[in-house]
Amino acid sequence: MKNISKVFDAISLILGLFKPKQKTIYLGGTISLYSYRDDVKKYVENNNLNIILIDPFNNNDFDANIKNDDDVLKAIKKIRSYDEIENIVSRDLQLIKKCSAVVAYIEKITTGTMMELVYAKILGKKIYVINPQNDMWNDIWLSYHTNKFFITIEDCFDHINKIK
Image 1 (cartoon, helix red, strand yellow):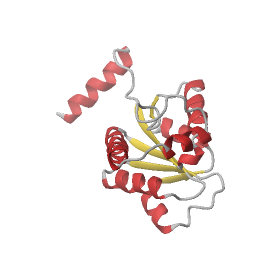
Image 2 (image 1 turned 30 degrees about the horizontal axis):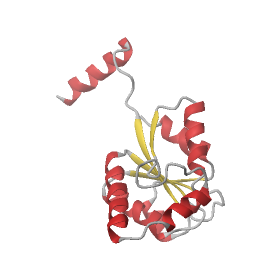
Image 3 (image 1 turned 180 degrees about the vertical axis):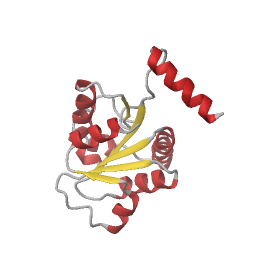
Image 4 (image 1 turned 135 degrees about the vertical axis):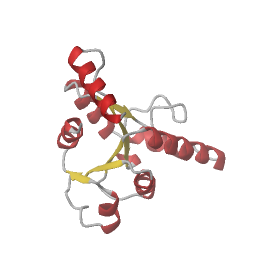
């Protein structure tokens, strides 16, 4: 039955009936480095990559006026109750469940980002880390949870785009 499905998918692609399946990527990473998400979005869009981005900061839990790293930190400081925290974390976990892979931009390890990576690993998701300083690969826990390290956004998303 699986072979028939593969043949059907191949014929459909050849005939142009279906687009190739898009990869869905959860954008994780340090809150204070929010702006990398805009760079990723521009790169994916400008290069017509077959990738859907899931940004946990694009939702109703945060102020819609978030434009930069400082805005994110201000929005986080407004969170006061355990219920608000629980809603945010639960929502992020649900988003990770829906994705095919997680990309985390890490200049230094933070608790929240590491928790996202551990959860993604438990679910069997692919995990890619962008580390511009190229100094995190020797962290045992981070390396254990990471499928591949990259120094640039471009290298990471070109790699993901080439995966079938």
